[in-house]
Amino acid sequence: MKVLFADRMKNMKSSRIRELLKLTEQPDIISFAGGLPAAEHFPVEEMKEVSLKVLNEKGAQALQYATTEGYPPLRQIIAQRMSRDGIKITIDDLLILSGSQQGLDFAGKLFLNPGDKVICESPTYLGAINAFNAYQPQFIEVAMDEEGMKMDELEKTLAAHSDSKIIYTIPDFQNPTGRTMSLERRKKLVELATKYNIPIVEDNPYGELRFIGEKLPSLKSFDTAGIVIYLGTFSKTFCPGLRIGWVAASPEILQKFIIVKQSSDLHTSPTVQMQAAEFMQKYELDQHIEKIKATYRKRRQVMMETMEKEFPASCRFTRPEGGLFTWVQLPEGMDSSLILQKALEKKVAFVPGIDFFPNTALTNYFRLNYSCSTEEEIVEGIKRLA
View 1: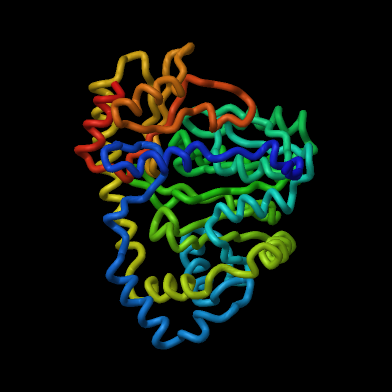
View 2: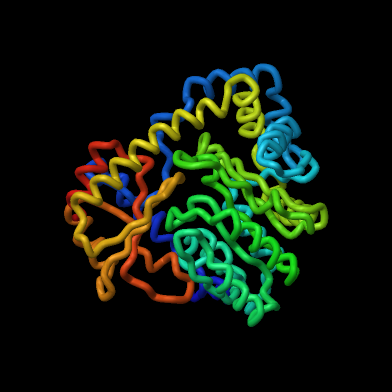
């Protein structure tokens, strides 16, 4: 039987990262592939306690259908946390999502017709490329350096493609490069987007995971025109299995997200929303974040030191001030996909860089994750790669 699929399926591919994660479930594989948090820091016992409390005290509400916007106490917690970063926000400006990845899919559904243009960093997050690809856009890549997206390049791009529908960016500890956009460029990006009236999708899964230097304000904090759509998540700072993310946007845009959410899955699980809110009301989330940051800081340092010692001098890599990733550049002509084949024979995994470029086929890059391997595994894995 021949099944006829929608044209959009031609652009949709299985995520190489998800496929690699299947392979790296083997216990003898040292995996630098996924963006997985350190599982040993999941608050299992605390979550047992709050889950029982929620079911004992609010069981019927937790197991019933709920409003699309999300559980008000959880939205209040998120609004308070965002307000600390200079973002003027109330719970009415927030919609709870089933992970911020859902926000990327919804942004594509809201803004993109076939052939519409998405401006993004080069390279950019593979999950965003896959989410937007369902809506058959054109990607316009803007080069980066150590301070993030180059604003002179963006200005030229906007002048040439003023009909672009969205600008997608990860300002803090970007995936895959680990780079952070400078303060001046953040202000300039919002200024340019406002001038051309093009919404910015600010994806911020890693912003609270800074271990070096001062925290920078989000793009949303500079937004006076309602042009920035902020995507947040607890997946990297709390428990990814709960699948709790959120979108903060102007009333006009947020209402469209709510309509799309209603048609997609009605609402995010009220049970997990209530469990998360109960945890954050009883325990100090900031203390939990400080604990995981201390672990990631050490693991990052071990990876940097081992790469400096073991890697050939011809290899370059980024030195992130936070987040989960570093980005390795090989000499031109080398293909990281071929290196991955050899690395897997040595029981080491990483993600080749080619998948992070929506248009260009640059093969001499790869991404390494340092958050979910022990320090001993990092040293051994980097030695094998070297």
